[in-house]
Amino acid sequence: MVDLNAVHEVTHIDNVKLNEDETAVVIIDQTRLPNHLEYLSLSKPKEMYDAIKLLQIRGAPAIGIMAGYSMYVLGKQHKDLPYPFFKQKMTDLGDYLNSSRPTAVNLKWAIDRLLAVVNSGEGEPVEVTVNRMGIEAKKIHEEDIEMCRKISEYGLTLVKPGDGILTHCNAGPLATSRYGTAIGPIFLGKERGIDFKVYADETRPLLQGARLTSYELQKAGVDVTLICDNMASMVMKNGWVQAVFVGCDRIAANGDFANKIGTSGVAILAKYYGIPVYSLGPTSTIDINCPTGDDIKVELRDPEEIKNMWYSEPMALAETKCYNPAFDVTDHSLLTGIVTDRGIIYPPFKENIAKLFEKKE
Ligand code: MRU
Image 1 (cartoon, rainbow, N blue to C red):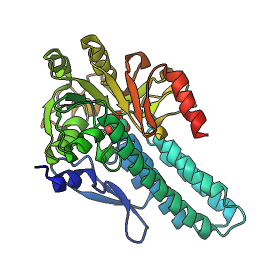
Image 2 (image 1 turned 180 degrees about the vertical axis):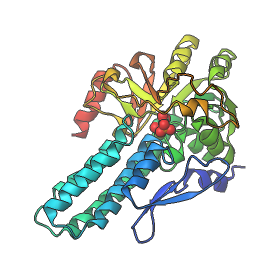
Image 3 (image 1 turned 60 degrees about the vertical axis):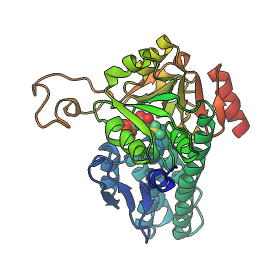
Image 4 (image 1 turned 90 degrees about the vertical axis):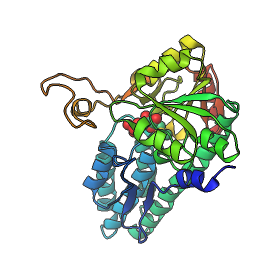
């Protein structure tokens, strides 16, 4: 018997929302999970910037939703400015929030949607423009719920009951809204009584796989096994993995995609073992203006994350040099398909992504 309540407690979690009077953005502080479920209320630009930078909210779609709500909340604070000053203020605030993390396209994409509302406000009372910003921010959130649901449906068609699925980082409800992307099909399957065996890479250095993915799946009653990143080859060799499902932070026009550091290594291993690799993400994560993976800016993070986090004592000498890229780019040749809300894109990726965007226009 499936415990639907347990599944929905995970899939329908409010990871990002507006407070009641819409003066603050409320998020789950993901840096405190899995041991503490704590909420943060953000109303100042610096708090919003830090929440993204410090990964209190993370995951490409969730960052986008949060950025949309943030722009709206900040817009309300400046609603008494004359329009030209209001427009300049919102543009500056958009630039500021956008500088918090460079790789996930959804951040800029959401800020640009809110700025488009601002830019179309000439001639109307600023308050009316701000109200329209609220409508747009909520629309981004609602669209993401819908897109995650569709991605989960499409993803579910790619696997059969009992399959082993390996995932890297966290692309679940905490990183999106409802169900998630990469592990959305697993939750949807669970709801329908279809069971999978999931292998969750712990995902060094910030452990999103251990702290968030295994937490979400375990809570929903899914059979999940946590492994260290360097164990992926072993579980694949053992024949335990039938598909790799990962998320994405930016998909280039040729199908190369950035995702959490370690994803490209997983894809290379999967190719060796003949296991299909799928990247699951909303069409908002496809950056049609980014020709290839070489054009994606990869975020470099503080070396202290490698040396000084999670263990009670430092794991390296303070003077040890570290290289800490947050993402890597997986070449499209390693990818079996891209699962989007508008269907599954197969090779040739460049042509098929272009076709999808032509249809969208
Ligand atoms: O640094 P993070 O935790 O924001 O990285 C997240 C990922 O790489 C996810 O896989 C990606 O954002 C997709 S979330 C649906």
